[in-house]
Length: 221
Image 1 (cartoon, helix red, strand yellow):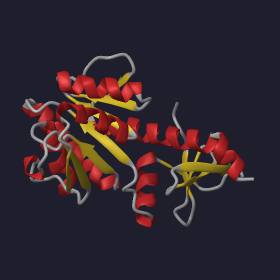
Image 2 (image 1 turned 90 degrees about the vertical axis):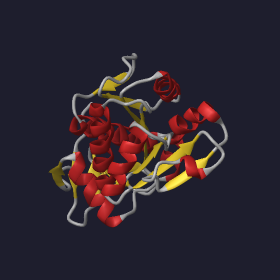
Image 3 (image 1 turned 60 degrees about the vertical axis):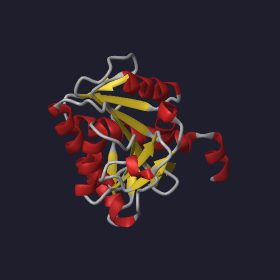
Image 4 (image 1 turned 90 degrees about the horizontal axis):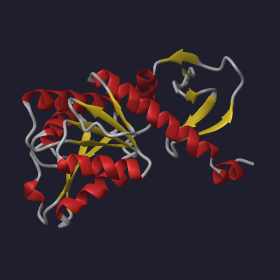
């Protein structure tokens, strides 16, 4: 489903005619028709980031250490695009796709968190903003999938496949790029721009679902 974003004169964002609470990341009650100017999801996100830090919007990027040159290039471009939007990126924090995406995030002034398999922060690549050693080995893949609101896979490996499976199991949107695993439930994109659009649609859907939850409805009365 394609969501309709509109932008008010004070940079308030509306999704499908309901105001977005960017801190709680949920939509409120509908507003009168015609409120705001129709914009793209990217424009709406940039407007939000001018008013509020969006660090709480965590996007996971997963992929192999033994990445191809094309996958490394894609991951770096993806990281830069995510950094520009102001979201936080979470990844495995080591080499290959993980290092490339962190490099792109860093170049855009964004924040990348590395969930490390070992017990010391010095195994993180040099572009990780916050290294978090877990001592869990490959079991740390579950933390990445659980922490992210959306997962984007660049390329594939057995480790990537486990993260994809965890993400789908947890009900997260999973987007695939550059030969990511062909698993039922993964939305595949043919470019970084297309992946970003799918990610923003998934974030919008999450905000709408949160706004429709029973506890949110009762609290608005």
